[in-house]
Length: 204
Image 1 (tube, helix red, strand yellow):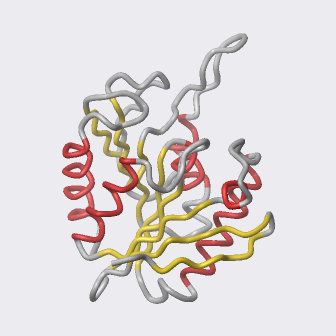
Image 2 (cartoon, one colour):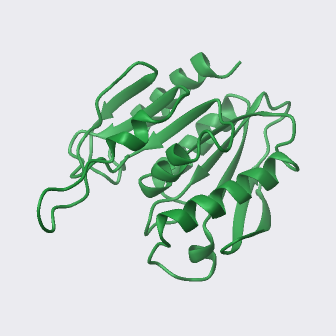
Protein backbone atom coordinates (compact mmCIF):
# COMPACT_ATOMS: atom_id res chain seq x y z
CA UNK A 1 0.00 0.00 0.00
CA UNK A 2 1.28 3.46 -0.88
CA UNK A 3 2.45 5.56 2.06
CA UNK A 4 0.72 8.68 3.27
CA UNK A 5 2.98 11.60 2.40
CA UNK A 6 2.77 14.72 4.52
CA UNK A 7 4.76 17.95 4.41
CA UNK A 8 5.71 19.45 7.75
CA UNK A 9 6.93 22.98 8.37
CA UNK A 10 10.19 23.18 10.33
CA UNK A 11 12.41 26.10 11.39
CA UNK A 12 14.51 25.39 8.29
CA UNK A 13 11.92 24.76 5.60
CA UNK A 14 9.47 22.06 4.61
CA UNK A 15 10.27 18.45 5.48
CA UNK A 16 8.42 15.47 4.04
CA UNK A 17 7.35 12.31 5.88
CA UNK A 18 6.40 9.07 4.15
CA UNK A 19 4.13 7.27 6.62
CA UNK A 20 3.55 3.52 6.34
CA UNK A 21 0.78 2.59 8.76
CA UNK A 22 0.70 -0.81 10.46
CA UNK A 23 -2.60 -2.36 11.44
CA UNK A 24 -3.09 -2.21 15.20
CA UNK A 25 0.36 -0.61 15.56
CA UNK A 26 2.12 -1.25 18.87
CA UNK A 27 4.78 1.43 18.37
CA UNK A 28 6.23 3.76 15.76
CA UNK A 29 9.64 4.07 14.13
CA UNK A 30 10.80 7.32 12.52
CA UNK A 31 13.79 6.98 10.19
CA UNK A 32 16.09 9.57 8.58
CA UNK A 33 18.20 9.31 5.43
CA UNK A 34 21.94 9.71 4.93
CA UNK A 35 23.71 12.94 4.03
CA UNK A 36 23.66 12.51 0.26
CA UNK A 37 21.07 9.76 -0.08
CA UNK A 38 17.34 9.46 -0.06
CA UNK A 39 14.57 7.52 1.64
CA UNK A 40 14.87 4.57 -0.77
CA UNK A 41 18.35 3.46 0.40
CA UNK A 42 18.25 -0.37 0.55
CA UNK A 43 19.02 -0.61 4.27
CA UNK A 44 16.35 1.99 5.12
CA UNK A 45 13.80 0.11 3.03
CA UNK A 46 14.75 -3.11 4.82
CA UNK A 47 14.37 -1.46 8.22
CA UNK A 48 11.03 -0.01 7.19
CA UNK A 49 9.67 -3.32 5.93
CA UNK A 50 10.84 -5.34 8.94
CA UNK A 51 9.35 -2.81 11.35
CA UNK A 52 6.04 -2.90 9.47
CA UNK A 53 6.02 -6.70 9.58
CA UNK A 54 6.47 -6.61 13.35
CA UNK A 55 3.59 -4.22 13.91
CA UNK A 56 5.23 -0.80 13.90
CA UNK A 57 4.00 2.18 11.95
CA UNK A 58 7.00 3.68 10.13
CA UNK A 59 7.64 7.26 9.01
CA UNK A 60 10.62 7.90 6.76
CA UNK A 61 11.59 11.56 6.82
CA UNK A 62 13.18 13.72 4.13
CA UNK A 63 15.09 16.64 5.60
CA UNK A 64 14.25 20.14 4.26
CA UNK A 65 17.48 20.44 2.25
CA UNK A 66 16.52 17.31 0.29
CA UNK A 67 12.93 18.46 -0.21
CA UNK A 68 14.36 21.71 -1.59
CA UNK A 69 16.44 19.74 -4.09
CA UNK A 70 19.87 20.23 -2.50
CA UNK A 71 22.32 17.37 -2.08
CA UNK A 72 24.70 19.01 0.38
CA UNK A 73 23.42 18.52 3.94
CA UNK A 74 22.55 21.37 6.23
CA UNK A 75 24.64 22.01 9.39
CA UNK A 76 24.06 19.61 12.28
CA UNK A 77 22.11 22.11 14.37
CA UNK A 78 19.66 22.70 11.51
CA UNK A 79 19.26 18.97 10.87
CA UNK A 80 18.52 18.38 14.56
CA UNK A 81 16.03 21.24 14.79
CA UNK A 82 14.17 20.15 11.66
CA UNK A 83 14.11 16.53 12.84
CA UNK A 84 12.73 17.33 16.28
CA UNK A 85 10.07 19.54 14.69
CA UNK A 86 9.00 16.71 12.38
CA UNK A 87 8.97 14.09 15.11
CA UNK A 88 7.02 16.42 17.38
CA UNK A 89 4.41 17.04 14.70
CA UNK A 90 4.07 13.34 13.90
CA UNK A 91 3.63 12.32 17.53
CA UNK A 92 0.71 14.76 17.76
CA UNK A 93 -0.92 13.43 14.59
CA UNK A 94 -0.22 10.20 12.71
CA UNK A 95 1.83 8.61 15.50
CA UNK A 96 -0.26 9.85 18.42
CA UNK A 97 -0.34 7.51 21.41
CA UNK A 98 2.40 5.19 20.12
CA UNK A 99 5.69 4.44 21.85
CA UNK A 100 8.40 6.02 19.68
CA UNK A 101 11.64 4.68 18.28
CA UNK A 102 13.91 6.75 16.07
CA UNK A 103 16.81 5.99 13.77
CA UNK A 104 18.36 6.39 10.37
CA UNK A 105 21.33 5.63 8.21
CA UNK A 106 24.70 7.36 8.47
CA UNK A 107 24.09 11.09 9.06
CA UNK A 108 20.45 10.30 9.85
CA UNK A 109 21.61 7.94 12.59
CA UNK A 110 23.71 10.74 14.11
CA UNK A 111 20.70 13.06 14.16
CA UNK A 112 18.57 10.39 15.83
CA UNK A 113 21.22 9.85 18.50
CA UNK A 114 21.75 13.54 19.23
CA UNK A 115 18.00 14.15 19.60
CA UNK A 116 16.91 10.89 21.26
CA UNK A 117 16.24 12.55 24.59
CA UNK A 118 14.46 15.53 23.04
CA UNK A 119 12.12 13.26 21.09
CA UNK A 120 11.44 10.98 24.10
CA UNK A 121 12.42 7.91 22.08
CA UNK A 122 12.46 4.48 23.77
CA UNK A 123 15.09 3.13 21.36
CA UNK A 124 17.42 4.12 18.53
CA UNK A 125 18.28 2.20 15.33
CA UNK A 126 21.58 3.20 13.69
CA UNK A 127 22.41 1.92 10.22
CA UNK A 128 26.03 2.52 9.14
CA UNK A 129 26.84 4.99 11.92
CA UNK A 130 29.79 7.07 10.60
CA UNK A 131 32.09 6.63 13.59
CA UNK A 132 35.21 8.43 12.34
CA UNK A 133 35.10 10.94 9.47
CA UNK A 134 37.53 10.56 6.56
CA UNK A 135 41.02 11.86 7.33
CA UNK A 136 41.59 15.25 5.73
CA UNK A 137 44.11 16.86 8.01
CA UNK A 138 45.32 16.02 11.47
CA UNK A 139 43.64 13.37 13.59
CA UNK A 140 39.94 12.67 12.84
CA UNK A 141 37.54 13.20 15.73
CA UNK A 142 35.50 10.18 16.74
CA UNK A 143 31.73 10.56 16.90
CA UNK A 144 31.49 7.88 19.58
CA UNK A 145 30.32 10.46 22.18
CA UNK A 146 27.10 10.86 20.18
CA UNK A 147 26.39 7.15 20.63
CA UNK A 148 27.56 7.10 24.24
CA UNK A 149 25.17 9.93 25.11
CA UNK A 150 22.09 7.91 24.10
CA UNK A 151 20.31 6.80 27.25
CA UNK A 152 17.94 4.23 25.72
CA UNK A 153 18.53 0.84 24.03
CA UNK A 154 20.42 1.30 20.78
CA UNK A 155 21.03 -1.00 17.82
CA UNK A 156 23.97 -0.35 15.49
CA UNK A 157 24.16 -2.36 12.25
CA UNK A 158 27.52 -1.83 10.58
CA UNK A 159 29.28 -3.21 7.51
CA UNK A 160 32.46 -5.14 8.29
CA UNK A 161 34.29 -3.08 5.66
CA UNK A 162 32.83 0.31 6.57
CA UNK A 163 35.47 2.96 5.89
CA UNK A 164 34.18 4.94 8.87
CA UNK A 165 34.92 2.11 11.29
CA UNK A 166 32.77 -0.01 13.59
CA UNK A 167 31.53 1.32 16.95
CA UNK A 168 32.11 -0.86 20.01
CA UNK A 169 29.28 -2.57 21.84
CA UNK A 170 28.43 -1.15 25.26
CA UNK A 171 25.80 -1.58 27.98
CA UNK A 172 22.50 -0.81 26.30
CA UNK A 173 24.11 -0.75 22.84
CA UNK A 174 23.97 -3.78 20.55
CA UNK A 175 26.38 -3.78 17.60
CA UNK A 176 25.77 -6.21 14.74
CA UNK A 177 28.44 -6.46 12.04
CA UNK A 178 27.29 -7.70 8.63
CA UNK A 179 28.97 -8.28 5.27
CA UNK A 180 29.57 -5.16 3.22
CA UNK A 181 30.71 -1.57 3.44
CA UNK A 182 29.12 1.76 4.41
CA UNK A 183 26.34 1.34 1.83
CA UNK A 184 25.03 -1.76 3.66
CA UNK A 185 23.85 -3.26 0.37
CA UNK A 186 25.59 -6.65 0.57
CA UNK A 187 23.49 -8.56 3.12
CA UNK A 188 20.02 -7.10 3.54
CA UNK A 189 18.82 -10.38 5.04
CA UNK A 190 21.28 -10.08 7.93
CA UNK A 191 20.27 -6.45 8.45
CA UNK A 192 16.61 -7.42 8.60
CA UNK A 193 17.30 -10.27 11.04
CA UNK A 194 19.27 -7.96 13.35
CA UNK A 195 16.49 -5.37 13.41
CA UNK A 196 13.75 -7.95 13.86
CA UNK A 197 15.50 -9.58 16.82
CA UNK A 198 16.28 -6.28 18.50
CA UNK A 199 12.75 -4.94 18.09
CA UNK A 200 11.38 -8.08 19.71
CA UNK A 201 13.40 -7.24 22.83
CA UNK A 202 12.78 -3.49 22.95
CA UNK A 203 9.20 -2.87 21.83
CA UNK A 204 6.61 -3.57 24.53
